Length: 189
Image (cartoon, rainbow, N blue to C red; front, side, top):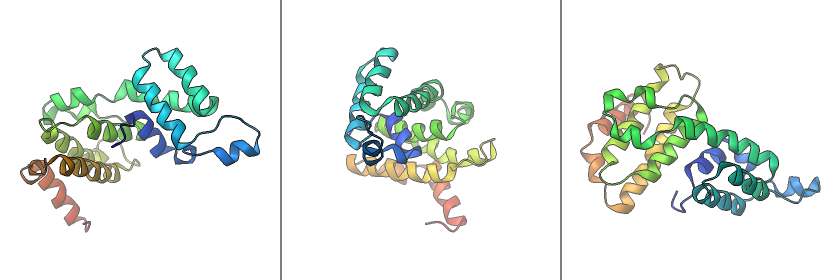
């Protein structure tokens, strides 16, 4: 996040860490294009700067290979269709339920996108969104690691808040206090 990696790229690599570096496998198969951390950084730049989807896809395929690019495109399209960070922040807390993505990729992108987009003003809403993520386990998302994603999201969000001197928002947040109490009740730190 600190390096400005696009949320879709971060979400993709979080769910497909085996595609972070495929250099050895590609060399064994005689392929010239491999996935590397540097190539994914380039993909992030492409995603952030090339608005034309077809051109963007060709550039990504030339950067990480056709198979990885095709898989990434599916995830990026899903994220674009389901992750609505600005709308979630602007929507009152009790009305956000239907705005949460319903897939692991979408939820992962939500966490990265939310942390990347948060400002001091939107931090209270971001805290609520992550705190409420935990409750989605009962809303048809059984089997997805929503509690783990919420915890991971809070790690990232707290780190960003500390870097910018926004920690007071956590101290005064009822949503975060409830989240922390639920974790303690479950025996988690």
